[in-house]
Length: 218
Image (cartoon, rainbow, N blue to C red; front, top):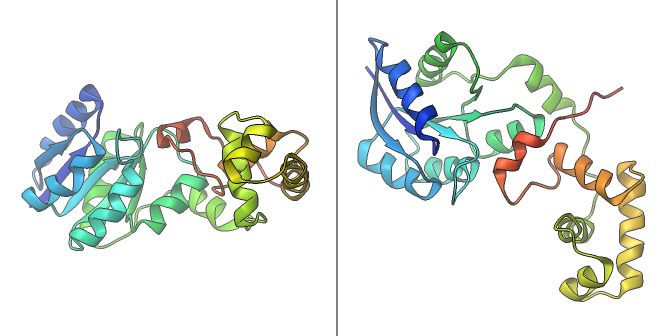
């Protein structure tokens, strides 16, 4: 029997997943969590073989929770559930030690089979998404440039970026100019979008990852 814990904040979705997996003879749902901060504690209490974790949990996001769970309970394998698969999200999930990456609208039977495969020690990832993630370009931005872009992504004007990072306005403008050149963007908004979709600038709210669509590359 494969013991599973489900971490999903949307009650209807969590209930549907519980109902779906409960029909499988070799799978038993032993626990649930609705908040990212509850995942590790719930898994330590129920000791599941596999934890299905939503990427956009409130509090501690699903990917961060998966990383913490890996350290706290190495024997529990994790599968990240997401509304939209992107290379950036996949790379983050793999870095956190997730063994599976499943889109929520996958066929019912596919979810159960993914649980079985991950429980056997296999890795479950959509092949096309894996290729896209592996072929993604390296981050061309320096740590300081990422700091500038991160504050800019919050909607801060140049003067505020300068104040928060203890820089002059001219230095911030130079950084922004170099960022646009490096990522191949025409505007600050486009640079932020590119940096997020390529996984260089991760949203503070991981739920936003559902809004990030990776662009086709030539």
